[in-house]
Length: 311
Image (cartoon, rainbow, N blue to C red; front, side, top):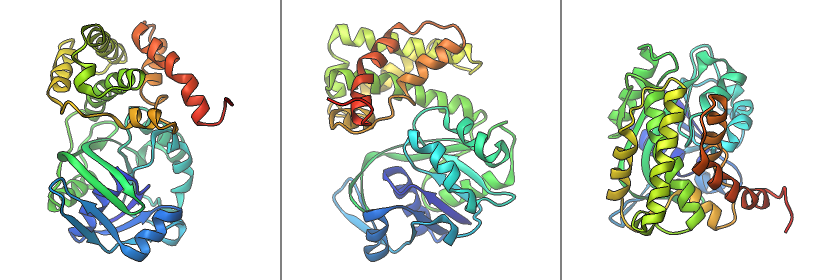
């Protein structure tokens, strides 16, 4: 397959690396130091055991130099999705489809507004990795997993081709029966965890062990489940408890990417995670007191990070 990786950060870079390593025709779209590092030195993946592998890749700053592709893996941050939708137009042909792997549940709708829903899949992934230098990504843990599918959940050949490409690359990939449910289950985890972790600025081992904070975490999870159910997503009330059990089993030192961005004064995915819980809750008339408190507490820091408010 001809596959474009739009946004060669941690997620796009890692999965693009695996696909390129397996022999797929992969084009990496990046900017500045990253595209220069990729062109000169290739893409480097550091494994959890300390070893590393380098893969020569095709790197571009301008999508127009690539032409039409079969699939686009969208690896930009959630707030960059609308801009990316404009930028990827030269890559889109009659049967091209975009798989967004951002945190959150709103990217498919944002992409559909610009590209049309026929070109958009739902998607999500599980992996722990981060960029340690331009063109260099550290895989910190978790078995790599991706799930994606047509927005109406119909079976189709083009999605199955990408599943097979991922599996050939050694990545656990599937088309779930309901991609929206799969995305919301991840959203449930990452929105509640990221929000409380960003406010407290502590690793998950402390977050879950302080009774008062654990109660807030539990209530946040319940709010997300309720909003999802009111939006027509097939979540169960027990999903809050199941997700809390997953958080209890996470490494005690674990942090989230949103938490790290907030702590380091960078723009974060606040709007796509906690902000989305609050907005979607208002859409269906569902109160979200814990998430509203978390969102309101973090919003000034987000505005400062984006330069909207001056200190």
